[in-house]
Image (cartoon, rainbow, N blue to C red; front, side, top):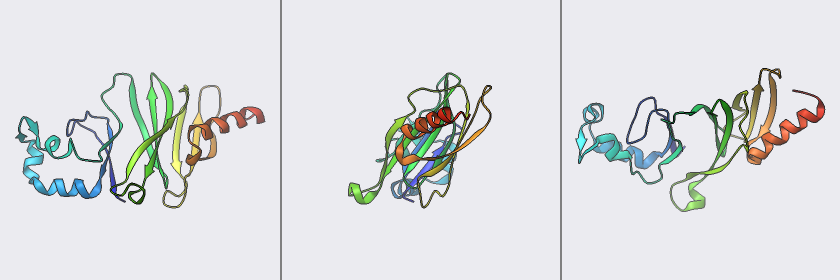
Length: 179
């Protein structure tokens, strides 16, 4: 794993609480060796910025997967598959799934990175849950949904198909008369 995925419970390095960020492992560990533990814990100011912000705020390869601190959007959960990170968010009470594709180091000639790969076209008032079947070997995931008018439904989806795969599965269920 050449990236750390960090869910922020409090503001850190210039990112608000509730954010989800991806840090390249090697540069993050190198930056962490620069400051002492007590400096980081005390959030000592360095040039008007906290140590965390000074060390990690401009780290090459840092990706903000979800920006926290938004009044009407929140991150519900996230899961990874072999090549994707999937984020389940609430946007004005509607759930939506976002896809981030991981591009490995070998293809970039340096450190790998996450790139946006699409969002569901429209959010829906429903409960939604995503869990990888085998996050080390495939992009398959369990997609569970429920709402006030439809019972809980478990489906097998493929993250490699992106948001269209989730929409296709919903259409198949409608045609079959299922939930």
